[in-house]
Image (cartoon, each protein chain N blue to C red):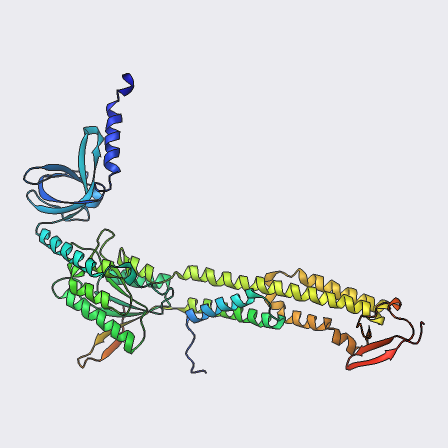
Length: 403
Length: 76
């Protein structure tokens, strides 16, 4: 029986593990009323969320608290976070990473209704999403001309890919006028792309803010303008945790404005590396090709040496040796020196050309009709016909005898 | 000098890739290989030069009162 007796730590760890492995509990939205809200001197907040019949203890860590407007007791809130176990007290708690204030309940209902409706229409389908060109020449940007989002985007583009051109259309990104303004901006950029210079993609961006601030990006008109855009659209709205209807509809969703600019263009440092790798590749290819040409030339030189009667002359033997020596030297050329030497290589190959040797008065003698090179007295007998090739042509001759 | 528009980075980069591809395919006369290599070196230099002197251009577009598209440089 003692085998079944556990320590409190063991059973608590077991219970905590059950909570943590539950995917529902690790990513959940809760609505409720705030009570017992306390802001601790550490910066962490402790509260209880309740409805008519139940309550749950909740924590907001200092870092999460810094990003939100803190609630007061009695506020109705919509919250997001995960539920886990606080082991020292054996209590389960809700760890809040996002909290939206009173009155947003209706907004969220509208959000959810619209999300489901547009999803049913297929506006969020993966198949609708267009890929971004790997190396855009021109990007449209829709955002506030004075906001941090635009600064972040332009800074990122300058760092990563300053070759791109930016076509900005200013739009108000919060308040009542924002949604129609964003729609008009998207349409204007598509017109620009059709009538003036084609755009490769459009970045639609806004910096972080409260849920109300981001609301224009949950507007149906904006969603439909994105879906109808001829140019692919990248959204970068709010923070990492903000998912708007515009994000779902966009061809590519980036977590932030900076993220949108990063996804839109390649990194110049990577491109430089790629260009240099290609150049080195080219060097290696041409090195191989030269080595092949050299090997082929050496074969010709050897055959020529054997075929030519002059090969028997000591001076010419010397010359062939010299040619071979030079060919070997060339084989040791390093890639780094390759380009400077290319013209030299061409000259050297010219020197190896058999027709230039003939031009200096040597001849190649072959048998008739086998066309075997006569490189030894044993190949022919008196009376045999041979062909003698000289610089400007060939003539036939007959072997009259051994000398 | 020439009124041809300067080739874009993307065009140059594509041509560089194609040139290397042809070099890699082999089966070329030596002379052709050499000229492809020269071309590849030239393209790589042009690519790097474009990257060196690139400066982000930002223009702002509005619809004018007559509905025409109007663009102006945007100074941020």
